[in-house]
Image 1 (spheres, rainbow, N blue to C red):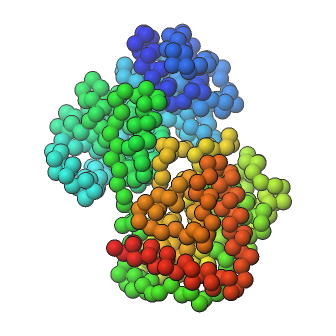
Image 2 (spheres, rainbow, N blue to C red):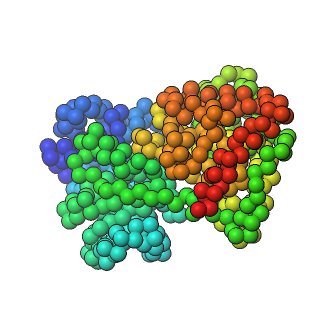
Image 3 (cartoon, rainbow, N blue to C red):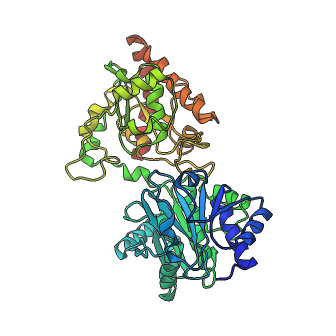
Amino acid sequence: MELTEKLASDIADHIYMLGNNVLILSDSDVRLISYACSDRDIYVSAKSPTDVTEAEMHNFSTVLLWDVNDKGVNNSIPKDNTQLTYNLLSNTIQDNIAYDHITQNTILSFNMPTETCTTPEMAEIIDQEMQMLWPDFHAQHKKVLGYINGNTQSPTHLVNITTTNHRDYVKQLFDNGATKIVISQIHEGPRTKFFKKAQLIADSCRDFLDPENFYITTVGVNAEVSWQSYCAQHFIDFPVNVMTCNVIEKACMPSAETKVILDKPYNVNTLHTDIYTSLNAGLQRVHRMMLGIELSEYDLFKQGKISMSNYQDWMEFISYGSDNARQRFTSQTPCWLDIKTSDTGGSIHQNVHESQLDLYDSYFSLIAETDYFSQPPEWNMDDLNLPGTIFRTEKTIKPMWFKHPFIVLGAKHYMKTLREFGYRTFHPYIDESYDTEDDDVTRLKMVVAEVNRLSNFSDQEWLDWKSSVADIVEHNYKWLTS
């Protein structure tokens, strides 16, 4: 395929979306791409795909392949065994721009057999969710709606499937009468890479369906405004639409039997052996490891009901904290708590069940939410959400059902967002000034410093404190039940 100025310009537009630290792998002349990128103030490097090393690839946020002849060239690219993600532009099948995804020992290329992440059963589930959450939109367009599953229920996430395959799937939907395509993300955080992937899918279908007919659904608070701002900053002229919803309260609803047991006044006269409850034994995340190390700085592990995953393999790559704190953290983890679910099953994470009451036999919950960083440290490879968005999960909702005060290690303004949803938070009885702190590391230190302050309370101070927060926990419980 000839690299024309038009095609080079299209590629440069996609590079702008993917990042500005870019390596192009090619044995062909890619100067047109470089020129188009420089016009957008993006400066790229180029190297032969047969010469590049894995170490060199680690220096770039995005790696692009331009090869017009050798389909086997992917085999010469070192397979990554970390959680770094690379993106490839594959162009050997058609002229439409598509990118492929590499992660954890796998190259998911344009030869990938999986054509779609959306089964007929999943499309039916998405349709039911659309009817429940956006009834007017669904009623108006139900005969022309087509769905792409972007949720975790799929064994292959939409970002792990080439845009080429997505385009072919959308074309099938279009040929069957679908003129509005919904990409469902309501069970995921508002990751920037998800929105960019949705845009790439829409862009690849421009010859038969305009991007204005694509919609991405999300629970990310402020996602519409954030995506519009992102597109304006990155010269995306025809952004896909964003539809936001709120489903987390319903996902954490206890059974009627459990609610009878939970529906009792907050006990202000009980003293607890453990200061706090902190449940962190789910997915490994950098900010949870940092929390564990910071708690170890104050020797607070033994004062809480805490679970923490195994981060031993991460210690050599992440240099956070003092040597003493890191050693204490390593010696105390992994640690687990016995979390029971209901007899009827369901997600152990979202499930609210009376058997979990013992977990909340402490003064407050220390919650490490799913998303934390706004500007990650250089050694944090977590995917970031769209700037200014908030992703609320069951981690905050569950303590409210158990009438448990809480401190949240979350994104800036997480507590403010809770208040905007009608909940009350605990300032001044808990110092929540951390919620307005821009610097991620400083915010984490402020959270743990507050935990340390509270840990020094006398029994009488705790009883006074519980009396002070009683109205807040009762309000949140009633707000959940309304």
